[in-house]
Amino acid sequence: MLKSVVRYGYVPFMLLGVNGAAIALAATGASKLWLIGLLPAAIGCSFAAERALPYEAEWNSPAGDGGRDVAHAGVNELLLLISVGVIPVLAATVTVADVWPHSWPFVLQVLVAVLIADLGITLTHYASHKISLLWRFHAVHHSIKRFYGFNGLMKHPLHQTLEMSAGVAPLILIGLPVDVASALALAVAVQLLLQHSNADYRIGALKYVLALNEGHRFHHLKWAGVGDVNFGLFTLAWDHLLGTFSYDPARRFTSEQLGMAAKPDYPTAYLAQLAEPFRASGACQAEPTGHAPAVQERAVR
Image (cartoon, rainbow, N blue to C red):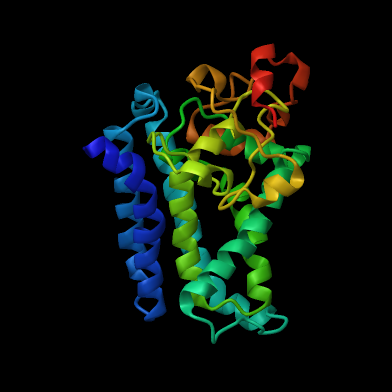
């Protein structure tokens, strides 16, 4: 019974329940301290779902990466919360024209913010796989060897800042209200937890639309070119347009398929990962796509 609840109820609970609570609180102008409460609750639900119904049981056990992942998550979520706090200052100085639909229902305003941010973040993510300087910083995220909720929060803080800036800057230019930004910030955190979750949940045909774990696992295949798919944060709409959508229902993922084939010895300690993009070794030259085992080609769009 519990497994069925997690399999079919976990995603609706997170997307509609947790995000819904954030939207309801933000709409009333409640104190931003509610973010501090909802975020740990979402993380707790993520870990509980992964243990109740794991996709790969061994991914629930730390492999010398537990403390590092907590450090990444703590720093990046703090940056996310700080960004919400500085939005009023930015809005007062860089807003070009306040054309934000303030009169719309609050939930629709959040949805508009999600869709606009999704485009900016997706394109930055895509560029990070094509531009060597950006890849240096994004490689931190692709060094993972197990796939679980905290992986979504495991990013170099400079790359996290770049992605969020690309998503939020267009919104600030048109007058993004801080309450909408607060709901958006939590939605990003929830999405990252779901997208990298080790829970073996199901979303049916929505896996072709929403950027969740069934599709995002393909993005973390370790071979250059093969993993250059499914870049979306919230949706896969832009991947369909870019021709980068990939899905194979027969694929089964293991730790041996994750990471970076061209850089299997990528640093694993937190401070070493922060420093690696600035080192000569941080270039992580991509392995030619043709070097991937033939069986892996099935994962390419």
